[in-house]
Amino acid sequence: MIQVQGLSKSFGKVKAVQNVSFSAPDGQITGLLGPNGAGKSTTLRMLYTLLKPESGTAQVDGFDVRESPLEVQKRIGVLADARGLYPRLTSRENIRYFGRLHGMEGEALENQVDSLMTLLDMQDIADRRTEGFSTGERLKVAIARTLVHNPKNVLLDEPTNGLDVMSTRAMRQFIQRLRDEGRCVLFTSHIMQEVAALCDQIVIISRGEVAAHGSPEDLRRQTGKDNLEDAFVAAIGSEEGLQ
Amino acid sequence: MMKRIWVIFQKELTDNLRDYRSWTTGLFWALFGPLLIGGLIVMLGRNVRESIEAPLELPVSGAENAPNLIAFLEQRNVIILPAPADAEAAVIAGDINVALIIPEEYGEEFSSGETATVQLVFDSTRQSASPDIRRAEDLLEAYGNYIGLMRLSLRGVSPEVIRAVQIEEVDTATPQSQALIFISMLPYFIIFAIFNGASPVITDATAGERERGSLEPLLINPVPRGLIAVSKMLSAIPFALLNLLITLGGFAAIFRILPIEELLGIQIGFDSGALVSIFLICLPIVLLACAIQTLIASFTKTTKEAGTYLPFIGLIPSLPGIALAFLPVKPALWTMLIPTFGQQILINQFLRAEPISSMNILVSAVLTLLLSVVITFLAVRLYQGERIITG
Image (cartoon, rainbow over all chains, first blue to last red; front, side):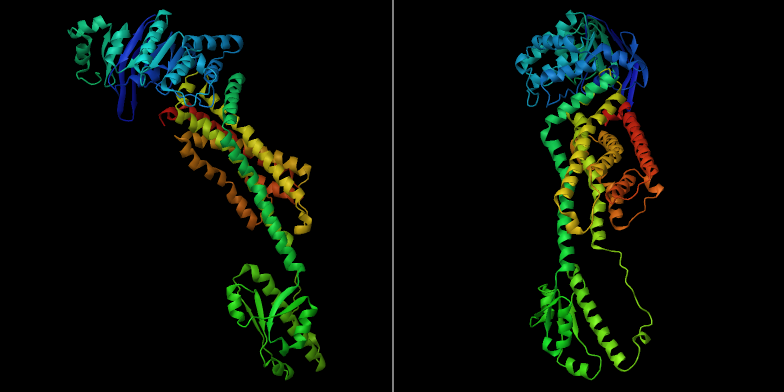
């Protein structure tokens, strides 16, 4: 469960995020949709404690990101925009490292790593060093690393960026699976169709502000448009980010 | 908390040990000092021996004009050679160091009791020739004095009349002290090796982490960021220590293999006791090297950028070290207040087997450790801020 209230952040004179509020409940997929540079990643970065909000609050399972960042970090799994791996470590070692940083160890950790690798169909790359992996293979390692501590809240920053069609499909199915397991899934995307296909709830962000918020049904009703694409254009007032 | 530090430390260690090329390059720098100093000692030792023991080879033109002078020189370990036709050209060309020209009038002037003139041809700017030049000058002057005194005695005048002041030369500069100039550079090479052992690891763990895009995912884990900074710093320590050990081992080997006493005529205190003491004295520097490089590298965006800064950091301790080679500094307490400088003086004292004040050791260790702590604290602060992510 993620709750955001009046979140703002500037970099120098640039107001990256202004007064953003929304909530992302458990067992639902919430999509942050907006053109490039709209403030989606900055919002997400404040949620996963990397940046400090200037004003407003953000809570994960009731813990404030500013006051108890460690508690928040324990409860979230994050696929950040930067998803670099350690090239000299194998897939398994990369995943295991993050598990250990979450305080896991021994049998429990090894079992979890194994089951994630089975789930993501990556046994063949399990003990290879990640140097030279394809984008898809790297993403699998990054996702396994994100989920190693079995977080209740999963934050994904542009998870399908750079993936081919097959991998994108697999990624979308995976996101739905996370929802079906009862997790709170929050992801960002600039691709309207993707958000429309996946999300239970959409938050449209434009120039750092929430332009519209609700289920796809709500959005169509609010904007008075029949299809979501028109609703999106009406909400942000331009055709940026349409594909 | 210790567990998390151990997890990060262990990962950095494995990761960096697999980066075979980086840390072996670091090892090369550990051997650089011993090899350089060893080479210098061999060269210097040869020079020292040659210039003292070897007879002076002196090309002379017109030797037949001054048989007495030639006999005097030959008695004093000078080998008289025929001078080339154009002595000046030969000196300019560097074929000979010095040449003596005895003109035809010499014999006449000498017999008539006038001042007889001889010419010594040399190039005073040529360092390598200066021992030969000086020896030739001294011998000629000695001969002049000797003849002069003989003439005065013959006329019944006491030689003391013209010798109002007698200079007794007490030159404390021995070949040994020349050699010690090089020995004074040894502490710097030790410090240099420590810095270079740590830097590839630190670069990879800080700037490399950012460059790979793995810093952001790492910082999202529930580990206080200060702990991450400290762990990264600590993970470079084994590599710095390894380099320190290899450098010390290298110096010990060189001082054992080379016949130092024979080459330089001095003993260098590099027995196992001194070795252990120097190792212990350097431990605070290991910490300082890791801390300061962690701080600097954390500011940089790429490993390449870190690679341009870190060598300069390693050079800073060399500045007092180089000064030390030319301006001897007494091991006063104030020098111990300067981290790395104090240790360089202490190491020198160990090498020269001088008595060492334990107060000095304590002060230099405590100050270096204090500075390391302050710098570590700054690195922790840096990791806690947003700058570490936004750059």
